[in-house]
Image 1 (cartoon, rainbow, N blue to C red):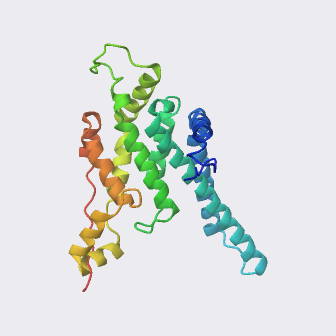
Image 2: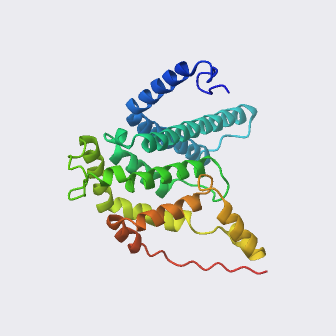
Image 3: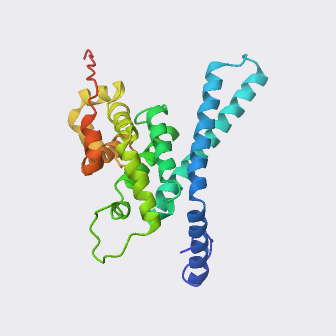
Length: 260
């Protein structure tokens, strides 16, 4: 087998592969704050460009069509950058959660902002939905991280050693987010934007409820924002500090009528 990173044989030259992976990992940890800012900047620029195109359509000429196509390609490229940055954040947090010590609060703020405002089409698996899936995963992993919770005041420490300063910084940032209106806003966005069924999904459910429920249960969390949001809300409800924010959300019921 050949390593996808260094393109060398992993059996005959494992030391080279391991060394390369170690360098990449260290660079990722050193650049974790940059990942947060890159995701935020790329996402903001992509949305601003698309809004500008929608608000000021160009004249129907060949030159204008080419300019619009170039602008759309730029927007797609910006969204891909945001996707890569968000994926990197999720992976770094899973491998080394304390690496986010300097940017936990900023990462949570970016995720909350995107979940509350980014337009997406449920079930389309487009770039916007993928970005929201990754940010929802990051938010859930950060708020429910055991490494951060172990640094909380009064937390049980079997060995009696004080927590690392990075763990304390992360725990303080997460606790501040949970106790502020940020978490309540996130839960409200998940419950009102990510969990409800769209009109097309309601029609599919009405056509064959059993098949729809089976497909929904079989869908992967990494590909479905609804599944990811469902797990996020459930995980938050299990956290004592976050449970109040989940229970406080009371979305307005919406009745959709269809003729079959």
